Length: 364
Image (tube, rainbow, N blue to C red; front, side, top):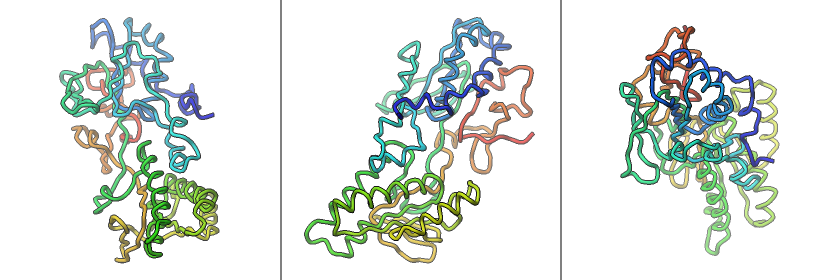
């Protein structure tokens, strides 16, 4: 059912303006670039980058006719797959397998095998129109990739708010390897809690699972973990009990309407082994979390889902940014054009676009 996530309506929807935006560049592209081929370089394989790749290839013939030259789509990413993130929480407990929510990027039928590059972008030279990359497989391998049009869709990273111990001791839930690590820790804790010589206090600490952040990811993971523990693990480990705590000083699912929030709260309140702690977390230790009240709560697992922020590349780019650190664009996702260029899509100052969660629109 979930094998080919590229067929999902959010990726295949025909009403998207992405491919139409690419077509607009044809009016001036030949004047800007006179080479035999036109290279569109996409940084990132998340929702925005992968959708642009899929839709751009679907309309490649139209784009090439408008440009009068072949168009190559080149993708640079630190991961070789697209990840269907809404289902990631389900993989932490085995409801779904990891291969069910990923789509290999190379299956997108690149014209040249070198058109997918497994690397991180270190810097962007807009004067020479080159991207400086470092191979994900070997830090000694560095190279430059030329572009005619650059799309920055590098996504975001978990935000730790500078709190001590979060990076060292908490588990994030944003990539497949995060889900694997969480699944392994849950099972290890149950096994360790049943071994001879383990005290009841240590058992309670090992089997107290804490989630920090009451957004969609945190609530979904809580639901998956609760069902997994109560429907599967209690049958295999009937002599040990567990507790689940959700830490969030604000309102859970604050981006949704009141009826959905109230329904989620009712479900949580009806679950005896689950509770909500209305405080802020100020520190994460190897075996505990510290609240803003100074209280220290022992635990065996901390999953951090308290929000996301700009990644390293976004932070280092010298373009205008919002207070949150996201790249400012106009409504056509162009970097450096305010107000937008309506007559032409591609001019010398708008050869760079930014898509996805790394951007914010600037009011005109």
